[in-house]
Image 1: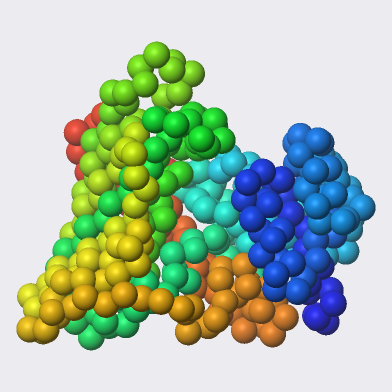
Image 2 (image 1 turned 60 degrees about the horizontal axis):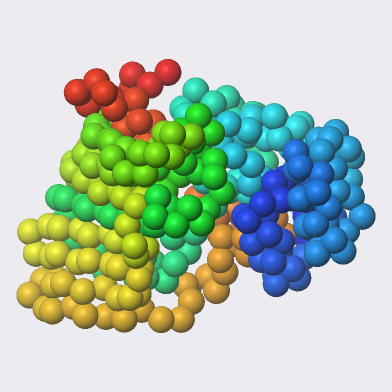
Length: 336
């Protein structure tokens, strides 16, 4: 694939993430050649920003444009059709998180991707964050027994988000919409262990007057990975301050990586760690740049979150989601 074609990119989904990817593509040196959205006005607005001709609500018309890659930023229930169409045309994809709404759809998408053999990355940006790259390096040869993650955000206080985020039928709720980032990051820093089982307690006990929203604001999750590590995750989407936290514990370490202050602190093998992490990762690329460079060069190792691995994080999330209200752990092997 020649460079000019590889940098001609289409975007499906002209919302906030579509705009983010447009900027990332142009910053890299690429160009957006087509925009699709179910809202024609949104597609036209992003197409105008991108100085491209085609803004459409028709996927067939979108895929008639010659492109070297497509970014898919649709809500999670709308994954299979654009992925299937891209696969049929051999077009590399960057798919926003979660890779699908649930494992049933995730498996359908993965089957298309594997049959087509195309490059397919998922937008887990924490895998490209220098803070978590550094944490991964620090624990590479260490024994880990426990991992703890936290995500807080202000959705139910400010409602400054796309409203579908708080509608479980569309977003899946806070686990696939928010928690998925730090849970995937926990897997990444430990070398991508696979999930075994998970359980979650969840409740919506604030903004009760907003009956149009059913996503829980408070979630506590427990899970097991196949490397013997047990994990917990705390999620609250009605908290004033945003945070992503990952903490790992073992016989000779306790390290806490907080993205808010961009610091790793704790202890490791008898030494105190209080390390600010600055600069960029070892690739010098973010998730979009890594995907674009992989298309240009054919080097798939640049992609830290291929779809096949992202489905493992989806399995962890889906097991937790399916456990709600059952009072039991859901084994990943039980997932539909």
